Length: 489
Image (cartoon, rainbow, N blue to C red; front, side, top):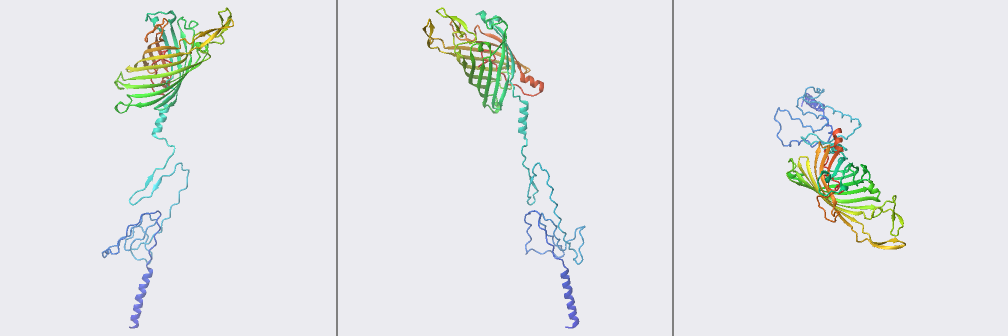
């Protein structure tokens, strides 16, 4: 080999070494910002090579990478990309530096926690979970608040003006007793308040406060047209819906139960002047609603039956009427005069058991017919054996043979009609008397000298308030047994 051949070979080897040294290494890839699913699987090694002259496919970048990876050799540069540096072969794009991560947002006064975002999977967009919010009003809560605003707790409060007169004053009845010829007015204020007001459970408290005025000159009052207070009654009533029909007859059949408590205070002159303290009554009540023609009919919709039992006990200073301030002089059989506080010789009805049944039927629209019957069983005190001091001695007597059970009957029939729901009119007939008459005979259940016709004009105070202010709702149906003999049942 000649020296010239050696020089040519050395030059070729040097050119190859310089070209290899100028080829830039592959830039490293930036780490992914968020965890990402594994990249697509690379083609197997034994795959067929690309045809000659075809550009090589660029590798697919992993999703979520912060920077762009280098392009494959032979790929054309994107428009606007920086040109290759000196010494870089044509068709090779220089790697761009990764973009810096944005700074974290400054914390602010977040009233509610931000929504939590789940990590998206392949080909799935971001999924946002609603954040938990506390003390947020729902539609049901809003309806309950609106019902509380429109429902008056003191609904059912009334003021009643009652006018009653004996039947003989109107020419009805054959037995005429001058002492029973009575016509008078009865005024009653009845405030009512619901302590518990739920759809199926209700607890209400009420009071009956009023006075009476007799416009005739009978033996009922001491003075002519003298107003007198009545006994004040304090009432509490708890009711519970036991059953209601569903389906096509929803609400047409209904069963309710109630428990009533009543305390009567002696505020009338006849009570406080006779030694009475108070009376306490307690008893259950059962109300049954039965469908007739249905609620969509104009009349005879349904009949409502109310059955009740009440037991009452009287607390008094003595078994007989007494008045300590009025001591009457009485003469004994020996001729001596002694002061005595006893007003009469008969006993109070210390216990009373009342059983009543009432039926209510809408005749046509708001016109309602009601009837009720009741049995008032009075139990008096049984006096035992004793003696009366006479001339320093003792005269024995036996009081065990006296009458201790006195039954009374009550019958009521009435028609009621509301006038624009503001005033209720009730025209009725009532007969409440002792079963045994003054002649010792048994009286009729439907008529006696004490029978009366009456007219009740009742102002619904809560409805009047609702009409003026626009608040409240339609009042509940008032009790139809408004006659004097059935008011305390």
